[in-house]
Image 1 (cartoon, rainbow, N blue to C red):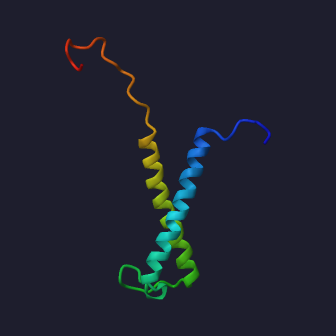
Image 2 (cartoon, rainbow, N blue to C red):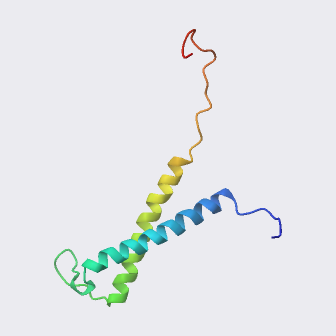
Image 3 (tube, one colour):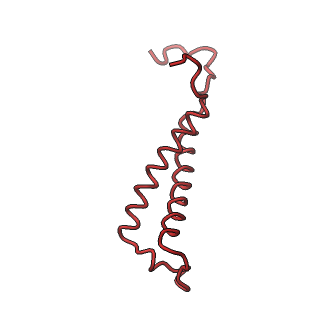
Length: 97
């Protein structure tokens, strides 16, 4: 090891969000397309998709990845909010002991 500083806090958060959402998107892709055939997909029930199956897999994976990354980043944001440092000036007598 070179002993230099590691990645910043934001970089570590971004890597954690990207990697976990990538894995979740892969699992969702497997689950969805184990049940759904890409050739049977239609635009809101009307015209069939004119895309090859690989394009449907790719686009759906990117959509799954984006949605799970959004959810993971919101979770990380809410979990890492700073705590309230406001403390009461003095305690009421007898509460809590």
